[in-house]
Image (cartoon, chains in turn purple, blue):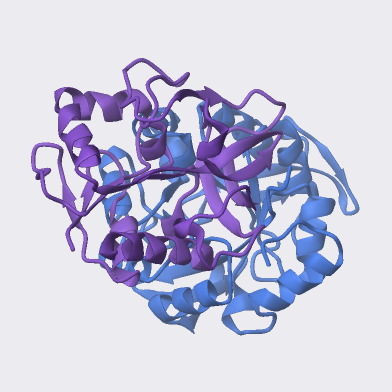
Length: 200
Length: 266
């Protein structure tokens, strides 16, 4: 089982790597140049900005498209999920466009970033949240959230001034707006499920 | 809105050991940071703060090896501070497993450090720690009425060793404007006393900024946490000695707060 964490060159991937190790995986941290064409699981981590991450991925987007087409299980975390979409209010750059919709900024009268522990309301069960209790608390740090144009992609929602999608899934693509690697036991369940899905 | 209030144990680390003092002095040992961190994580603490309290006064770098050892088994957010002078220090701490860096002395001496760190790592990564002490004279800009008389709050740097003459409330507003993601506000008067947070300090700053405020200094019993969230309007409450000596474990404090209607991750 080969799992790669894509490094866009900014921030802390150490805790994500440790969390995956605790979930039973042995992930490699790779740059887009080092990304191979036969991997079982790919994690797009949640560090940096939309524009910066896409600048790093840039011309090599097709590598990711090929992996998705070949059935690699992909988990996007926070910003890593936001780049599933084509455009974001955060800044310029064209995302992967593998999910329809866009990424928008919190507009209500709330403190931004949305930072801290908030709960998940399960909309639709899937294998990534197997064993996870409804209303589980997970850790968020973000100012933007996804607004998919297809309702059936939404797995969980969270309230913060608005009700926003906090987990998405479609075929072999999974995304969490929160950080499972920082979400205690609830996060551990999700990462273990991710590893299980890959093993299937 | 269901954002939970956070309970944050703090490890004050001196040369690799957790210590705890009173009013920032008279340090005594409280154990091994890796063990304590693990214990707090299992007790469902919401976040962990690690401060290398002698790094700044000794003008040395933070102990990265200890940071890494602590981070390895942690699955909750982890803030690290002490002796962080700028981009390079912040990067190496973040690469050692921290999620946020806390700056204090360097920010006071060169406020541009805050905006620079925000630009590179993002607001969510940058905590500004403010150590403040009451002064009952007319030297400050924001005078606050308290039970003990009118006072203002003076900022201290170098782990509480150097008075700066700066007003903590004005400073808090300034760093918020520079993009800091969060403020860690410690009352030096209450530090280690277990008499409760300085609620006037916490409230005054909470009301003047639009970023989360972590109350710190003085927690001695569950009621103090309740007061920090209600009267002090804090978003998170930090404590050390009550947790280290197991006087009030995290679950007990959380139970108290949930019973009194505070939004808490159980």
